[in-house]
Length: 149
Image (cartoon, rainbow, N blue to C red; front, side, top):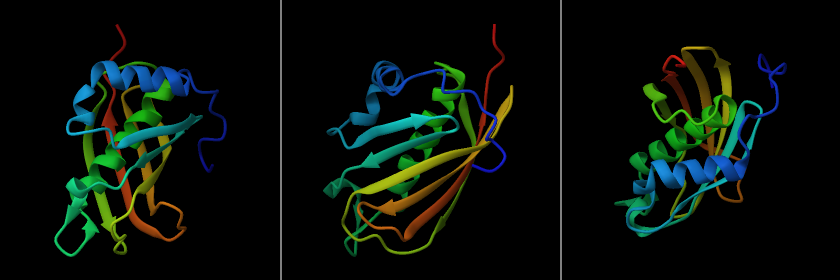
């Protein structure tokens, strides 16, 4: 992992990040559970989004907003795993490049932190269709981290 190889191990385990998201953001499961955090590590996280009709757009492909939510959640999980349970770390910028049509399938978002400072975190998320290698979306994001009290 370029630029972040000297990071210490994650400060939160997978189970701790999942519990935090369940407690602080139960609304992500409104309408049924479809987002699943599968892994966290130093400067990284992997999240899966199950296929569901509510994520589709006309033409039978996963909608942009569904991919945006997956990327935002995956990046947030990577940040939490590496700074601890900070609910008020907020998205300040997200940028998306939709590269190919994924079809009606589940997706996997691999988040990687590029910079983790005291006040800002910058990362990217590579989204693929479940079981495939070709990217369907590349996202970058910046989060503001509140000062520690």
